[in-house]
Image 1: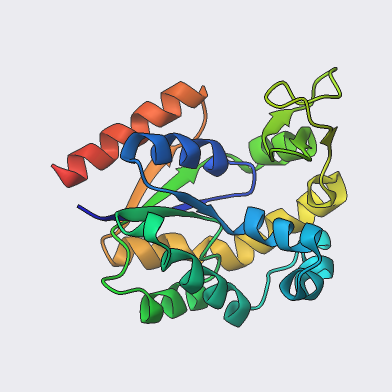
Image 2: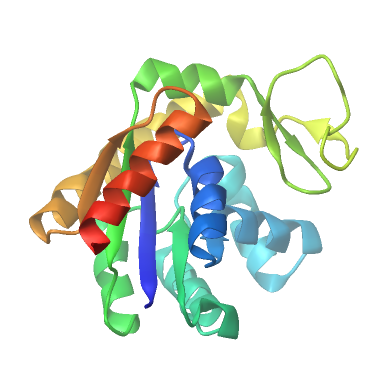
Length: 211
C-alpha cells in the first residue's frame, strides 16, 4: 500500500518532529522542502543561489521551482511506497500544481493546529544543528546532543522574521485547511502537548482512516 501524506501546520508547530516519527512508523521517507532548500544554499548550487535571499527574508519560493523540486524527489525509488511532504504545498496554487504532476494525488493531509503565541515563542527560542539539522529548544549547551555539531539560530528563526513568517503562513497557507477539507483529505489534530501525545493522536487518526 502506498501512503502519500502532506504535513500542514504553522512554522514551529512540530511538523518536522512528527514527520520523522511517521516516517519511522510507516517506513516511508519524509521530504522536507525547507531542508532541501537550505542544503542547496549551503552547497552553493544554482537553486541555492536563487533562493538564498528569499529564505533569509521568510518569503515563499516561486511555485515553479518548488514543484520541479518535489516532482524530481518523489520520482526516487525510496518514494515508491509513499512519502511525507513537510513544507509543501504552502499555497492553494501550489496544491493545485502538485495535483497536476502527482499520479493518483495525495492520500491524507495531517494538520497540526496550535495557538499562534505557542509557535511564535517556540520558533524564537529554537536552535538548529549545523551538522545533522536536528532542532532543539534553546539550551545551555553549544553542541548538538545527537552528533556534537555546532548549534545556531537560523536567520528565519530570528524574532523579527518569525512574526513575518507567521503573517505569510496565515495569509497564504491557512486557506489550504479549507481546500483539503473540501476534498475529504484533511485530518486535524491538536498539536499541543508532548511529542509522544501528539504522535499517538496522529497515528490513531490515520489508522482509523486506513482501516
